[in-house]
Length: 105
Image (cartoon, rainbow, N blue to C red; front, top):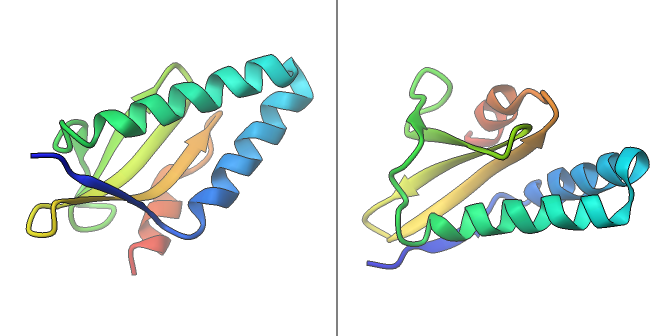
């Protein structure tokens, strides 16, 4: 089964912040590579949505997967709807757990 990917409305802000942060210290090529790496990791959730660590203590059903060495994708799998809802994408030690918890309400 192929799952549809949906994004919390604030994920666009997450990605913009990541791009600007990397752009400032490593340049546009590095920022583009990191965003492509994140995009590729999100795409894998279409076919393997139940991977990652289940973190019910943060919010019911929340899972997290690392991307590279510094990014984390936090999401929930909705099997009945065949959807993966991306709650947060963080980078460089940002508090993905807090963002996920506040966005899951």
